[in-house]
Length: 255
Ligand code: FES
Image (cartoon, rainbow, N blue to C red; front, side, top):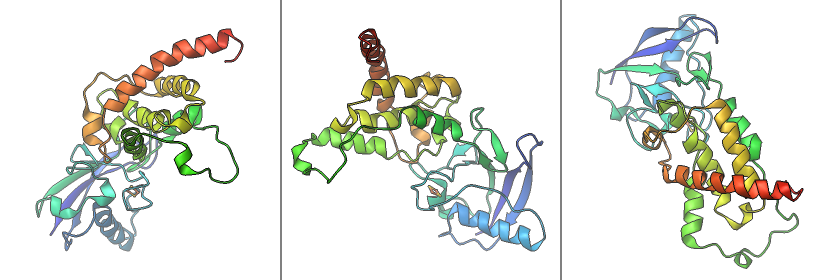
């Protein structure tokens, strides 16, 4: 297979960006999209040019670092798939493919296809801990968790924090990410100790950096882990309750 790639190049956060066109001949249909970028980079390096900068780590769909817009879609045309798991057989031979970084004000461009996703870290820092007993592991059956609850918590825990939800959202909202990170803890018995403080803190930190959800649903479509927007409803429910509970605790000098 062969492809023409139009890739966004930008030397730094304040530099003016532009598309550059690269040919990628002799591509196997088994190659992943990142491997095609590797091929392009090898030829750029041979020519003494600067390779295309892009984030990647696991290349197994679990680290969430390989986000990019491919033909205007977050992670490309295949649903439920991260860029590193997207194979070239999904494209027509001879196609021209446009590759851009995430386009979101909260994810400023660092260079080429690399963006700064530290706004996600601020949300996690705002509430990302649980109180647990240390010592040896307790007997698992001492803490029964209904299967439906365990399944839902595991579905939420699949979030890899790639940022596709934000990039796909017309409002640049991070509700899907935040709700997944909240609900994989809030649904489980082990996550109850700080449930209300965590919810209020993470939601309000999210609102500092990201836009507001207006139920477009693009986030769910773009998510490489198929995380459901139902979690946003759970988060909104928990946030309303958190405001009441935390106010009560604060009135008792406990908040
Ligand atoms: S490189 Fe880790 S999810 Fe793609």
